[in-house]
Every structure is written in structure tokens, then in C-alpha cells.
Image 1 (cartoon, rainbow, N blue to C red):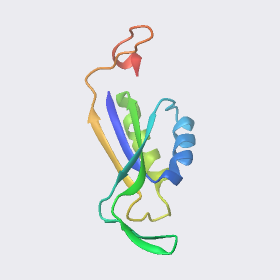
Image 2 (cartoon, rainbow, N blue to C red):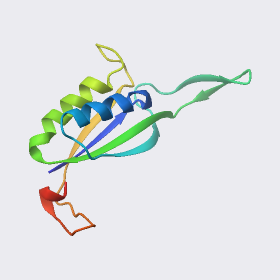
Image 3 (cartoon, rainbow, N blue to C red):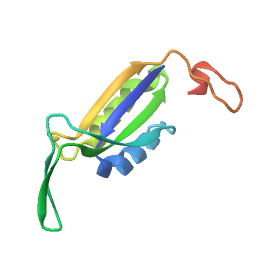
Length: 115
């Protein structure tokens, strides 16, 4: 089992969600996030005053999958989270972490069946 963490643009969330459902990944958790990497923030104007913002709005998607779903899920995220054919800085990151066990609270199911 693996835990896939994807940090993506908020505008791509709906496309990613629909694409994941199409490949059979039907469970995920979504959280608002703020951060920066190579973008390093940008200047914005609010009521005529310009200010520098260093933390940019992103969305974190957390997906627990069994081993046979890891590669299809990553390919799906790479394809549908890009903002253009070639991609841009700030499109996001996908990280894969080992998941030792999972426990389903409602019925006590554990392991791959709980994912």
C-alpha cells in the first residue's frame, strides 16, 4: 500500500477528481494548502496597492492506494494536473510514501481491504 500526496493547482482539482474516478480511484482527501517552490511568490494588486505574496494557494490531494494502483494513479495525476501540454512551473508535485497499514473505523477492516 502507498500514500500518494499530490500538491496541485486549485483550478485542476475537478479534472483530476474526474480522471481518478475514471480509472477506479474513488477515495481521496482534499485539503487547502499554501506554499511555494521555484515560483517564489508574486506581486498582486489590492484596491490600488501592490503587495508581494510569498505563499501561493494550492490544493493537497491525499490518496491511499493498493500497490497495483500506484502507477496508474501517478500517470493520471501527471496528465490531468498539468496546466498545459508541456506543463509550467507551479503545476505541482506528486510524492509517494509507504503505507504500513490502514484501518477502517466503521467495520474494523484492516490492510489492503481498508484502502
